[in-house]
Image 1: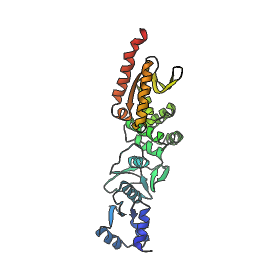
Image 2: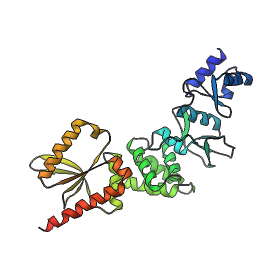
Image 3: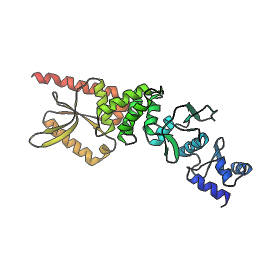
Image 4: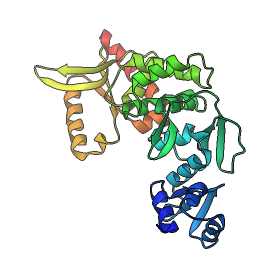
Length: 304
């Protein structure tokens, strides 16, 4: 097979990236690689790693390139692996890598050294730690609130299961890994909380518990017939808190149903507060303060 075709075939399976050793095995010499770089057909992204074709500067091409550079003595990890798994972590051009031994990194990489065994996986052809280990790594980098949100979303989306968190706790209890204290706290709380309909509801439930607001989850209201199921309810004051997810509640039909539902509840003495995921993320203090004020404002009604 023609050397260029062989290299393109390899790169097509690796998001456009190829290591120089793979190019050599396909029949290209070092000078041949240099000619292709000078001609602009190949782009060097890391030492000994190049990209070919239209995906040449995509995030996955860079992650694949970093993985090829680190292999077999390291892998893509931490925030970069979290982004790849689809966790609630934004893309950063500076790639996180975990190496088993010290090695001088090129520009554009954050290096973490870990001498302990890591359970690994291959996600979209890129070698990464298993998702539960990535969550543990993030607990060593992010603040508690941010790490909690990422963990909730990963569990809700099925990226990681509660059983995997428990196994990770048991296997790493005495390893001294960075982030273990926060990971233990969040994982135990999450296992105790139980499942709710959305990870935004999980987050609100945790906020309410933290601020000692006693709410009932998924309370059914009936008045001779079924009226509604409430996300969260304060029964004594008839305060209903609804957490509106970004997908369901962008639906105009669902919005109309919600309006009719809120009217039915209002006629039966309920007040409805609606919060979005953005409210929870950007204004959690306001969400809690509004909930508390609504409950306190209706408390005197109990004595009339």
